Length: 589
Image (cartoon, rainbow, N blue to C red; front, side, top):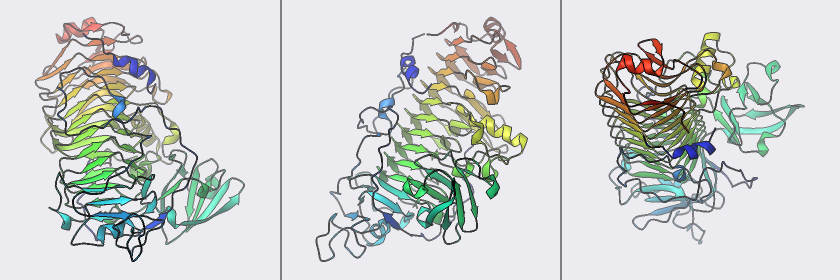
């Protein structure tokens, strides 16, 4: 078996999704204010990314059978200044939240006199000329408190060669903020370690994020419980926060605890095709960050963060391209983990991003979302490749009821668990369930729905690196007779956790398969054990899977294979299953 050179890369890198009922379309609510850009101390990002590569998401991908290393150089480009050129066909409108005016014509980035200049709000640029929608809207740097709607009345006005593009003008970060931070006022000291402020309009606070940190801030139920940094409490229209500095001096996000109507979505794309969202920061909405009801949406080089529900959800869409974005901290309703009913939910939660059929998800960094990180649901022909997905809740990459899906060259890992991430008011058994899901599964396929016929077939999982997850590769066979059908699992490298004090009694699995499988091959994979409770393979039934040319190693478990519920060593495993004839059990460099 070839030695995979990506070991060197790994050595210096890091150590059930469903749409929730029908979407009710309501008239858009556009309430927009703007904050000029604030000069803040530079944020030092992790040195993962090299200079950006211009990639073409439509380029035919390499053969799935090629052993190609995970590529970290095509991720979200931290150091790039984003800019969109004016349209060469149709109309370009400009938005300047500092110097613009909504009485202007919007056709120039600078004020030229006589009403010629940029608009002040994004909403005005979108809706000013309803009979002639803009081909591009270019936004100057700043923070725009708004949520908006791209209507279906624009349908058939755009195509692949003439897309509607919403993006930055090029002079700095454009933040589209759906939070209620602009409804917070009069921060003042309440005591030595507690600040308080007024929340207007009877709004309820959902979560608090400061300087991209959401894990420090936890809701409590009374003033007497405000004892630790980050504890917060809302009583009536007063918000209390245990913190050592004035929150208004930092990059503060206060999200709203509110309903799920479309008026609460950050960006609601109705039945509209060929939309591009480029180089934007989209954050803090009280529901879904981006809801897409059209086809051929392209989201590129955006930050999508801290939305109450999914970062991205799709209706009857297809042909999505999600390229080089950073998607993190979404499903804030499930933070701390187990809050707002998540402790008793067996699934059906939102996800970081939900992918429809015939889509490409490439080069994204997806982490710490309160549901599955990347989820493909009821789809055919999608490609998930070259993504970094880590520390999401439950599963890092999940393909549920998919056909002909390719999942390859992704780096998936879990960094560990922290008891403070669990909502402290859940019951003991719920607490244990939440702790388990803190260490997510790596890559899982499945057929959810106990009354539905299985769909998953012809999927390919290849050349992924999976480190320290609860299980590396698995299949959730909830539907009757579900299993791995016509599936290829090859050239993956799986490292099992070395330790986890919170989960000492829990088994971890390299691969966990076996139920109604058929015509599936598992070959040329490397599975390396860690903690004494880690199991390399758990195969629950016989037949349907051909295992061969794999390499296994476990320094701490003499019987790391389970077949039909019984533990075996490697020789016993080979003899009883008649599989892995040419496979090896040896230490891997």
